[in-house]
Image (cartoon, rainbow, N blue to C red; front, side, top):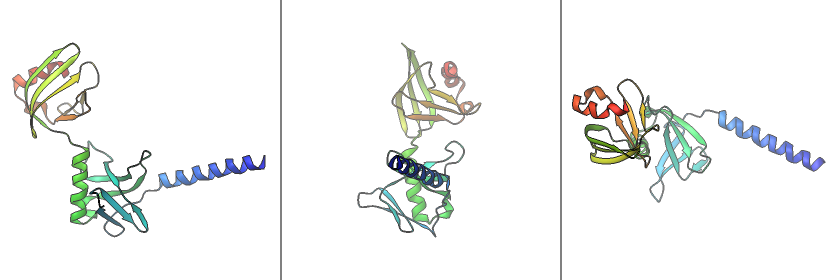
Length: 185
């Protein structure tokens, strides 16, 4: 019975320690953190004696701010937060460029500039659009949450492959283009 209790206490202690670590907020800046590229080109981080061979950068509030409050996380399955970069100005210019590059990769979301055509059939909508990255065709499933309204004028569209597209202001589209969107608005 004594062995089982030790195991239970150890697990409880470990859980408490992990909880304390999760609740601790560590701000990363140019004084306490060093970001660099490892030998394979991935973003790496050293904080004091701790080294992380590969880290990911996640926006804590992706729809409100693009470059503030960035969570730096491990890339393993559990993805633990290492720390937070409160503002890009808290890190040096080169680090800022690396963090922005990682954000661009993670949050690639072309902006739809023009709606050329939307054709719907058999529960799917086939979009032909012009984006800030060039012309694009994609398919969404009708009736789901493929079109999300972030405000009265801003929408995010997610295609069947998980790619996201943004229309920042539907009012800036022509009347003809908005008419094509009627089914989704």
